[in-house]
Length: 274
Image (cartoon, rainbow, N blue to C red):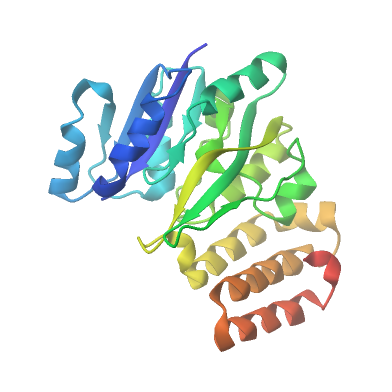
């Protein structure tokens, strides 16, 4: 058993130390920790260089986005399993150990992920809702089911799929989940929150609902044939409508309510699409 950790990094020096500390503090130590510098500013790159031999540093000459950075890490990883982490998030100390026990007990499993605990600047902590214990195509098509920061997956599986789609700067996890499920790969879910996700004012990408909506629409249209076949006629429209409603709910205010209303209209006012 060998586990490679892949962490994309772009100008996150104020978060990466805590992130790496949580990786190095694992009760089951990974075999290598790969940090992919996605063409950061020189001073941000220098911060990584000071880590020395504790990490395997991969430098990209141009910014390729989170998908490209992860793919660069996947390409050089030597482990049979790859664990993904983001540079601003934290792992619980027994994260890898807990997941490895599950994989040992379920040798037919291709990957395992977990719930997350979102931590906000105002002190709030919210544990994500539990999902089905095993990824299904219907669930993946309905909504994003992959929590990349928690995922441990067979290296050969993610490579066979071609890694993450580098044309997607957002919602690449939505797309990966659909391709994993469509390929018949078994991805299990642990309800225990094993990762702490920072949610604050540091330009988190999900904060731009317009970009999220555009990306989720691209994913839906890309997999339109599967959506209509598995979830029925109109499923593509309903998936986009769900994104509108969730974006409006997160945004709040008059604009948010207007966006939500647009989502209900697009979705045909069907409560089953919520």
